[in-house]
Length: 138
Image (cartoon, rainbow, N blue to C red; front, side, top):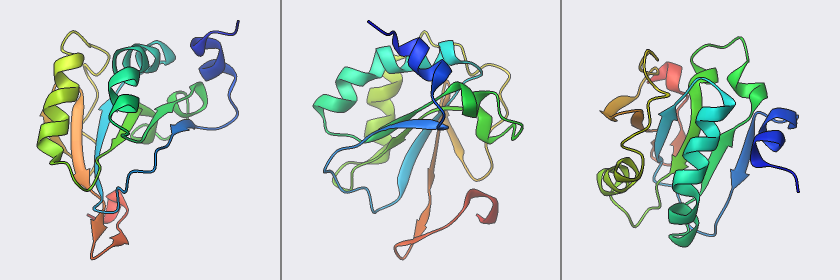
């Protein structure tokens, strides 16, 4: 059996998406910062069951992202997309409660256009009137 760590280390994509039918068009997302594949694995192990059982889409960074030259983008170990019917602060509190011992975000600068929530969680809305707004323009 191949481990999730091996998958993240060998994947050719920057992220592995875990989709659901839930609409996230309101644009709220949570970025959890990290520095290495082990951080992404920790987050996946701690949050996968909660996120899937609540049909919340998310993605996990692979080694390709975490070792890329773009320092800000390479520190997004996990991104969680907030469903339209859920308040982002409630989701952030639920997520934070599951990873209070997580330390992989230490010494990582706040990403552009995000607000620090708690621990390694940073939130932002990337939509205005339904249109995607890149972080560098916010």
